[in-house]
Image (cartoon, rainbow, N blue to C red; front, side, top):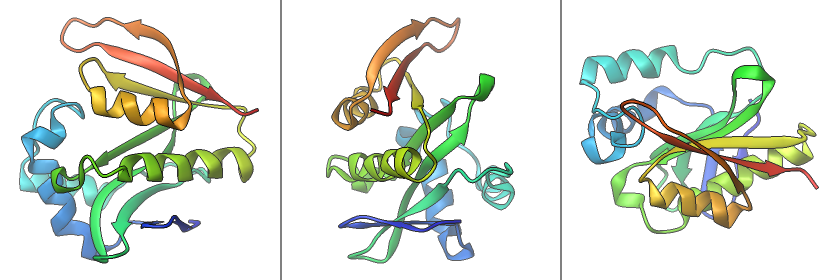
Amino acid sequence: MTVLETERLLLREPQLEDLDAFCAMEMDPDVRRFVGGYPRTREEAERRFRNGRRHKTNLPFCSIILKAENSYIGRGGLHPMPGGAVGLGFYLARPYWGRGLATEAARAFVDYGFRELKLPRIVSAVEVGNAASVRVLEKTGFNFLRREAGERRSFDHFELRNS
């Protein structure tokens, strides 16, 4: 997998050394509030980490490493969506919220998708109420498409076209 780098971040394939920080993030109810709705147990988080995102594509879905601390702070990247679209996803551990790190990572993934993969567009879905993720998408240039109302959870859908 291609390693991406920004001013403050290293975006790379997950490594075993990421496991404890990944599990802590997955077990945090504030982090999981808009990503699945419930915290995972340590066992569930370990299983998810070990299974990873096993899709046979050239789409990067990475550990997000803060270079200054050489520490795992989250995960994100591009992933296949139904209908052949490519989606952007990201989430960070709570201590790293509000520093512009998610926006920095999102921009790196979008740039990679457009420049290297020549994608015509990238989409993203955000659970209604997750204003921080909506702001990351807006700062990255995404446009609102539609709201999908669900019985338990509703999502706003966004897209960014390659110009």
